[in-house]
Image 1 (cartoon, rainbow, N blue to C red):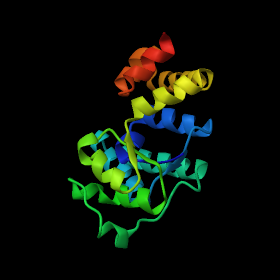
Image 2: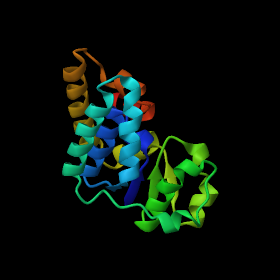
Image 3: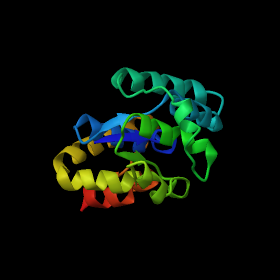
Image 4: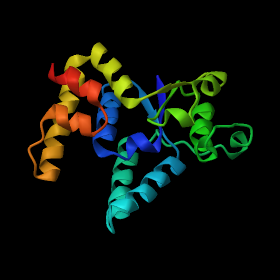
Length: 180
């Protein structure tokens, strides 16, 4: 399965690391465009002066780890597509031009299922998608979650528990499954 990751699911670190961990396990092939990555860098400015620089370093690491994931935009295709938020058309164009199966996003209103279906696409929220992967591979996803938890604790200097970390990362269903 090929999945375009919207900016809103790759910018939050824990969510991104869970998704890419699932991709490393072979559950899906991630796809993004340079514009999606640029949106990530711009959004990171909001966290402070070093936010964009940190995001650009993380983007470089993600691109190095997934060299085949970045696909150029499709401006000609964008001209024939429509979404309620015109600023998201580039995400849909990336999905169509790469023959992706799904768009992973938390912005359900911006990606109506009927419009995506016309293009042969589905919309999945990251919590639901990761939960599906957990059902198929509980040990694999538990291993990814343990690594993400260890890194979150290392970087924050806190002692996070898995379920609250997943809840904060907008992955409550996955967090509950992992700790049941």
